[in-house]
Image 1 (cartoon, rainbow, N blue to C red):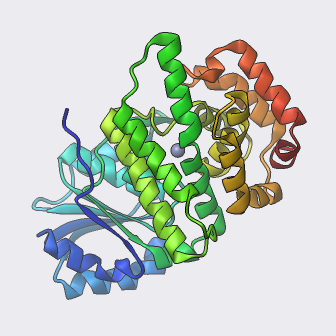
Image 2: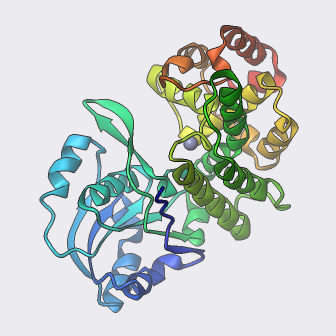
Length: 349
Ligand SMILES: [Zn+2]
Protein backbone atom coordinates (compact mmCIF):
# COMPACT_ATOMS: atom_id res chain seq x y z
CA UNK A 1 0.00 0.00 0.00
CA UNK A 2 1.47 3.32 -1.04
CA UNK A 3 0.47 6.30 1.07
CA UNK A 4 1.24 9.89 0.20
CA UNK A 5 1.08 12.78 2.62
CA UNK A 6 1.69 16.49 1.98
CA UNK A 7 5.44 17.12 1.86
CA UNK A 8 5.11 20.89 1.95
CA UNK A 9 2.83 21.96 4.79
CA UNK A 10 2.72 25.53 6.07
CA UNK A 11 -0.10 26.78 8.30
CA UNK A 12 0.68 30.23 9.68
CA UNK A 13 -0.02 33.95 9.43
CA UNK A 14 1.20 35.57 6.18
CA UNK A 15 2.07 32.24 4.56
CA UNK A 16 0.69 33.52 1.24
CA UNK A 17 3.52 36.06 0.97
CA UNK A 18 6.03 33.23 1.23
CA UNK A 19 4.47 30.91 -1.37
CA UNK A 20 7.16 31.77 -3.95
CA UNK A 21 9.87 30.93 -1.47
CA UNK A 22 8.24 27.61 -0.57
CA UNK A 23 7.91 26.62 -4.23
CA UNK A 24 11.51 27.58 -4.96
CA UNK A 25 12.68 25.43 -2.07
CA UNK A 26 10.93 22.44 -3.61
CA UNK A 27 12.51 23.32 -6.97
CA UNK A 28 9.19 24.12 -8.64
CA UNK A 29 10.22 26.91 -11.05
CA UNK A 30 7.39 26.81 -13.59
CA UNK A 31 3.77 26.45 -12.61
CA UNK A 32 0.20 26.46 -13.88
CA UNK A 33 -1.88 28.66 -11.61
CA UNK A 34 -5.62 28.21 -11.02
CA UNK A 35 -7.67 30.89 -9.24
CA UNK A 36 -11.04 30.40 -7.58
CA UNK A 37 -13.86 32.75 -8.47
CA UNK A 38 -13.10 36.31 -7.34
CA UNK A 39 -9.85 35.23 -5.69
CA UNK A 40 -7.52 37.07 -8.05
CA UNK A 41 -9.14 40.37 -7.09
CA UNK A 42 -8.64 39.62 -3.42
CA UNK A 43 -5.19 38.05 -3.29
CA UNK A 44 -3.79 38.43 -6.81
CA UNK A 45 -1.23 41.09 -6.04
CA UNK A 46 0.10 39.35 -2.89
CA UNK A 47 0.60 36.03 -4.66
CA UNK A 48 2.02 37.57 -7.84
CA UNK A 49 4.61 39.59 -5.91
CA UNK A 50 5.58 36.49 -3.95
CA UNK A 51 6.00 34.40 -7.13
CA UNK A 52 7.89 37.09 -9.03
CA UNK A 53 10.31 37.80 -6.23
CA UNK A 54 11.25 34.11 -6.14
CA UNK A 55 11.42 33.96 -9.95
CA UNK A 56 8.64 31.43 -10.32
CA UNK A 57 7.33 31.50 -13.89
CA UNK A 58 3.56 31.20 -14.39
CA UNK A 59 3.22 29.32 -17.71
CA UNK A 60 -0.55 29.21 -17.62
CA UNK A 61 -3.28 30.73 -15.49
CA UNK A 62 -7.03 30.50 -15.35
CA UNK A 63 -10.04 31.57 -13.29
CA UNK A 64 -11.97 28.41 -12.47
CA UNK A 65 -15.74 28.73 -12.43
CA UNK A 66 -16.93 25.18 -13.00
CA UNK A 67 -16.00 21.75 -11.78
CA UNK A 68 -16.99 19.46 -14.65
CA UNK A 69 -15.01 16.38 -15.50
CA UNK A 70 -15.43 16.94 -19.27
CA UNK A 71 -13.86 20.42 -19.00
CA UNK A 72 -11.07 19.12 -16.77
CA UNK A 73 -10.12 16.35 -19.20
CA UNK A 74 -9.82 18.83 -22.08
CA UNK A 75 -7.92 21.33 -19.98
CA UNK A 76 -5.45 18.84 -18.53
CA UNK A 77 -4.16 17.75 -21.91
CA UNK A 78 -3.95 21.24 -23.39
CA UNK A 79 -1.69 22.72 -20.71
CA UNK A 80 1.76 23.84 -21.90
CA UNK A 81 4.69 21.44 -21.47
CA UNK A 82 7.37 21.73 -18.84
CA UNK A 83 5.25 22.56 -15.86
CA UNK A 84 6.81 21.56 -12.54
CA UNK A 85 3.70 21.94 -10.39
CA UNK A 86 0.09 23.05 -10.31
CA UNK A 87 -0.95 25.71 -7.83
CA UNK A 88 -4.59 26.18 -6.80
CA UNK A 89 -5.77 29.11 -4.69
CA UNK A 90 -9.34 29.58 -3.43
CA UNK A 91 -12.18 27.40 -2.17
CA UNK A 92 -13.12 23.75 -2.65
CA UNK A 93 -14.07 24.04 -6.32
CA UNK A 94 -10.74 25.27 -7.68
CA UNK A 95 -8.80 22.91 -5.44
CA UNK A 96 -10.78 19.85 -6.56
CA UNK A 97 -10.47 20.97 -10.19
CA UNK A 98 -6.70 21.38 -9.90
CA UNK A 99 -6.24 18.21 -7.87
CA UNK A 100 -7.85 16.21 -10.64
CA UNK A 101 -5.77 17.85 -13.39
CA UNK A 102 -2.65 17.14 -11.35
CA UNK A 103 -3.78 13.53 -10.86
CA UNK A 104 -4.31 13.06 -14.60
CA UNK A 105 -0.94 14.59 -15.48
CA UNK A 106 0.86 13.00 -12.52
CA UNK A 107 2.06 16.42 -11.37
CA UNK A 108 2.34 17.71 -7.81
CA UNK A 109 -0.39 20.11 -6.73
CA UNK A 110 -0.07 22.83 -4.12
CA UNK A 111 -3.39 23.79 -2.50
CA UNK A 112 -3.76 27.26 -1.00
CA UNK A 113 -7.23 27.30 0.58
CA UNK A 114 -8.55 30.79 1.35
CA UNK A 115 -11.30 29.34 3.54
CA UNK A 116 -11.56 26.05 5.40
CA UNK A 117 -15.18 24.97 5.17
CA UNK A 118 -14.37 21.23 4.90
CA UNK A 119 -11.51 18.72 4.78
CA UNK A 120 -11.46 18.51 0.96
CA UNK A 121 -8.31 20.61 0.48
CA UNK A 122 -6.15 17.85 1.93
CA UNK A 123 -8.16 14.77 0.97
CA UNK A 124 -7.26 12.23 -1.70
CA UNK A 125 -10.62 12.69 -3.47
CA UNK A 126 -12.12 15.31 -5.77
CA UNK A 127 -15.79 16.23 -5.87
CA UNK A 128 -16.62 16.86 -9.54
CA UNK A 129 -19.64 16.95 -11.85
CA UNK A 130 -19.86 13.96 -14.16
CA UNK A 131 -22.70 14.13 -16.70
CA UNK A 132 -24.33 16.81 -14.58
CA UNK A 133 -24.17 14.81 -11.33
CA UNK A 134 -21.87 15.42 -8.42
CA UNK A 135 -19.46 12.51 -7.91
CA UNK A 136 -16.57 11.84 -5.58
CA UNK A 137 -13.58 10.69 -7.64
CA UNK A 138 -10.29 9.31 -6.47
CA UNK A 139 -7.42 11.74 -6.94
CA UNK A 140 -4.19 12.26 -5.05
CA UNK A 141 -3.58 14.06 -1.79
CA UNK A 142 -1.92 17.44 -2.51
CA UNK A 143 1.87 17.55 -2.48
CA UNK A 144 1.64 20.85 -0.68
CA UNK A 145 -0.85 22.70 1.50
CA UNK A 146 -0.21 26.36 2.29
CA UNK A 147 -2.71 28.04 4.63
CA UNK A 148 -2.44 31.68 5.58
CA UNK A 149 -4.26 31.81 8.93
CA UNK A 150 -4.58 35.60 8.65
CA UNK A 151 -6.64 35.08 5.47
CA UNK A 152 -8.76 32.33 7.06
CA UNK A 153 -9.53 34.60 10.03
CA UNK A 154 -10.93 37.19 7.62
CA UNK A 155 -13.00 34.73 5.58
CA UNK A 156 -16.77 34.68 6.26
CA UNK A 157 -17.68 33.14 9.63
CA UNK A 158 -19.91 30.58 7.91
CA UNK A 159 -16.85 28.88 6.34
CA UNK A 160 -14.96 28.27 9.59
CA UNK A 161 -18.21 27.19 11.30
CA UNK A 162 -18.64 24.72 8.45
CA UNK A 163 -15.06 23.44 8.92
CA UNK A 164 -15.85 22.76 12.60
CA UNK A 165 -19.01 20.87 11.60
CA UNK A 166 -17.02 18.71 9.18
CA UNK A 167 -14.41 17.99 11.84
CA UNK A 168 -16.82 17.05 14.64
CA UNK A 169 -18.39 14.43 12.34
CA UNK A 170 -15.39 12.12 12.86
CA UNK A 171 -17.01 10.84 16.04
CA UNK A 172 -20.16 9.60 14.31
CA UNK A 173 -18.26 8.47 11.19
CA UNK A 174 -15.96 6.24 13.23
CA UNK A 175 -18.89 4.76 15.14
CA UNK A 176 -20.67 3.94 11.85
CA UNK A 177 -17.50 2.24 10.61
CA UNK A 178 -17.42 0.08 13.75
CA UNK A 179 -21.12 -0.73 13.32
CA UNK A 180 -20.32 -1.79 9.75
CA UNK A 181 -17.77 -4.24 11.10
CA UNK A 182 -20.29 -5.81 13.47
CA UNK A 183 -23.10 -5.88 10.90
CA UNK A 184 -21.34 -6.80 7.64
CA UNK A 185 -17.72 -7.45 8.70
CA UNK A 186 -16.29 -4.48 6.82
CA UNK A 187 -12.69 -4.28 8.12
CA UNK A 188 -11.77 -1.25 10.22
CA UNK A 189 -8.32 0.30 9.78
CA UNK A 190 -7.29 1.03 13.38
CA UNK A 191 -4.53 3.44 12.42
CA UNK A 192 -6.89 5.53 10.29
CA UNK A 193 -9.31 5.60 13.24
CA UNK A 194 -6.51 6.79 15.53
CA UNK A 195 -5.55 9.65 13.18
CA UNK A 196 -9.13 10.73 12.67
CA UNK A 197 -9.95 10.59 16.36
CA UNK A 198 -6.78 12.45 17.34
CA UNK A 199 -7.65 15.12 14.77
CA UNK A 200 -11.07 15.85 16.26
CA UNK A 201 -9.84 15.54 19.85
CA UNK A 202 -7.08 18.09 19.27
CA UNK A 203 -9.77 20.62 18.45
CA UNK A 204 -12.04 19.45 21.27
CA UNK A 205 -9.37 19.79 23.96
CA UNK A 206 -8.17 23.25 22.94
CA UNK A 207 -9.42 25.70 25.54
CA UNK A 208 -10.06 28.85 23.58
CA UNK A 209 -12.74 28.06 21.03
CA UNK A 210 -12.89 31.56 19.57
CA UNK A 211 -13.04 31.18 15.81
CA UNK A 212 -11.21 34.48 15.37
CA UNK A 213 -8.24 33.28 17.39
CA UNK A 214 -5.33 32.60 14.99
CA UNK A 215 -4.06 29.71 17.10
CA UNK A 216 -7.47 28.00 17.15
CA UNK A 217 -7.70 28.51 13.38
CA UNK A 218 -4.24 26.99 12.91
CA UNK A 219 -5.34 24.03 14.94
CA UNK A 220 -8.59 23.52 12.98
CA UNK A 221 -6.62 23.66 9.71
CA UNK A 222 -4.14 21.07 10.94
CA UNK A 223 -6.96 18.80 12.13
CA UNK A 224 -8.69 19.02 8.73
CA UNK A 225 -5.39 18.03 7.06
CA UNK A 226 -5.17 15.02 9.39
CA UNK A 227 -8.72 14.02 8.48
CA UNK A 228 -7.65 13.98 4.81
CA UNK A 229 -4.65 11.85 5.70
CA UNK A 230 -6.83 9.37 7.62
CA UNK A 231 -8.77 8.81 4.37
CA UNK A 232 -5.51 8.31 2.48
CA UNK A 233 -4.33 5.75 5.05
CA UNK A 234 -7.54 3.72 4.93
CA UNK A 235 -7.99 4.11 1.18
CA UNK A 236 -11.63 5.06 1.77
CA UNK A 237 -13.72 7.88 3.15
CA UNK A 238 -14.75 5.76 6.16
CA UNK A 239 -12.66 7.51 8.87
CA UNK A 240 -14.12 10.88 7.85
CA UNK A 241 -17.60 10.14 6.62
CA UNK A 242 -20.56 8.18 7.98
CA UNK A 243 -24.35 8.52 8.02
CA UNK A 244 -24.08 12.25 8.84
CA UNK A 245 -22.31 12.73 5.48
CA UNK A 246 -24.91 10.66 3.65
CA UNK A 247 -27.63 12.94 5.05
CA UNK A 248 -25.69 16.02 3.90
CA UNK A 249 -25.18 14.59 0.38
CA UNK A 250 -28.88 13.74 0.22
CA UNK A 251 -29.79 17.24 1.46
CA UNK A 252 -27.70 18.70 -1.38
CA UNK A 253 -29.89 16.75 -3.78
CA UNK A 254 -33.34 17.42 -2.32
CA UNK A 255 -33.12 20.86 -0.69
CA UNK A 256 -34.24 23.93 -2.57
CA UNK A 257 -31.38 25.89 -1.03
CA UNK A 258 -28.61 23.69 0.35
CA UNK A 259 -25.97 25.38 2.47
CA UNK A 260 -22.30 24.66 3.21
CA UNK A 261 -21.27 21.00 3.47
CA UNK A 262 -19.85 21.21 7.00
CA UNK A 263 -22.90 23.05 8.34
CA UNK A 264 -25.24 20.31 7.10
CA UNK A 265 -22.81 17.64 8.33
CA UNK A 266 -22.49 19.27 11.77
CA UNK A 267 -26.26 19.38 12.29
CA UNK A 268 -26.60 15.76 11.15
CA UNK A 269 -23.71 14.73 13.45
CA UNK A 270 -25.49 16.19 16.47
CA UNK A 271 -28.70 14.29 15.65
CA UNK A 272 -27.01 11.01 14.62
CA UNK A 273 -24.92 10.97 17.82
CA UNK A 274 -28.15 10.69 19.83
CA UNK A 275 -29.44 7.76 17.75
CA UNK A 276 -26.06 6.02 17.88
CA UNK A 277 -25.96 6.51 21.65
CA UNK A 278 -22.48 7.76 20.83
CA UNK A 279 -20.30 7.91 23.94
CA UNK A 280 -19.03 11.32 22.77
CA UNK A 281 -22.44 12.85 22.19
CA UNK A 282 -22.09 15.26 25.13
CA UNK A 283 -18.71 16.41 23.75
CA UNK A 284 -20.21 16.95 20.29
CA UNK A 285 -22.98 19.07 21.79
CA UNK A 286 -20.56 21.09 23.92
CA UNK A 287 -18.16 21.86 21.05
CA UNK A 288 -20.97 22.87 18.68
CA UNK A 289 -22.25 25.13 21.44
CA UNK A 290 -18.91 26.65 22.53
CA UNK A 291 -17.67 27.42 19.01
CA UNK A 292 -20.85 29.29 18.11
CA UNK A 293 -21.96 26.61 15.62
CA UNK A 294 -25.44 26.30 17.16
CA UNK A 295 -25.88 30.07 17.36
CA UNK A 296 -24.89 30.48 13.71
CA UNK A 297 -27.20 27.71 12.47
CA UNK A 298 -30.08 28.92 14.65
CA UNK A 299 -29.86 32.22 12.74
CA UNK A 300 -29.52 30.37 9.42
CA UNK A 301 -31.52 27.16 9.96
CA UNK A 302 -31.91 24.17 7.66
CA UNK A 303 -35.28 23.29 6.18
CA UNK A 304 -37.17 20.60 8.10
CA UNK A 305 -39.11 19.04 5.22
CA UNK A 306 -35.96 18.81 3.12
CA UNK A 307 -33.96 17.43 6.03
CA UNK A 308 -36.52 14.65 6.65
CA UNK A 309 -36.49 13.80 2.93
CA UNK A 310 -32.68 13.69 3.11
CA UNK A 311 -32.76 11.29 6.10
CA UNK A 312 -35.03 8.90 4.17
CA UNK A 313 -32.84 9.11 1.06
CA UNK A 314 -29.49 8.85 2.91
CA UNK A 315 -29.15 5.02 2.97
CA UNK A 316 -29.43 4.97 -0.84
CA UNK A 317 -26.68 7.54 -1.48
CA UNK A 318 -23.80 5.06 -1.41
CA UNK A 319 -24.11 1.37 -2.14
CA UNK A 320 -22.44 -1.14 0.19
CA UNK A 321 -21.92 1.49 2.87
CA UNK A 322 -23.44 0.24 6.11
CA UNK A 323 -24.33 2.91 8.67
CA UNK A 324 -26.76 3.24 11.55
CA UNK A 325 -29.35 4.35 8.99
CA UNK A 326 -29.15 1.01 7.18
CA UNK A 327 -31.69 -0.21 9.76
CA UNK A 328 -35.15 1.17 9.02
CA UNK A 329 -36.17 1.67 12.66
CA UNK A 330 -33.23 4.04 13.14
CA UNK A 331 -34.50 6.29 10.33
CA UNK A 332 -37.81 6.66 12.15
CA UNK A 333 -36.03 7.19 15.49
CA UNK A 334 -33.90 9.94 13.94
CA UNK A 335 -36.91 11.71 12.47
CA UNK A 336 -38.69 11.59 15.85
CA UNK A 337 -35.55 12.96 17.49
CA UNK A 338 -35.29 15.99 15.21
CA UNK A 339 -39.01 16.69 15.70
CA UNK A 340 -38.76 16.58 19.48
CA UNK A 341 -35.28 17.71 20.52
CA UNK A 342 -35.14 21.35 21.65
CA UNK A 343 -31.84 22.13 19.90
CA UNK A 344 -32.92 20.46 16.64
CA UNK A 345 -36.12 22.52 16.70
CA UNK A 346 -33.91 25.60 16.37
CA UNK A 347 -31.45 24.21 13.82
CA UNK A 348 -33.99 22.62 11.50
CA UNK A 349 -37.25 24.54 11.05
ZN1 LIG B 1 -16.93 16.24 4.96
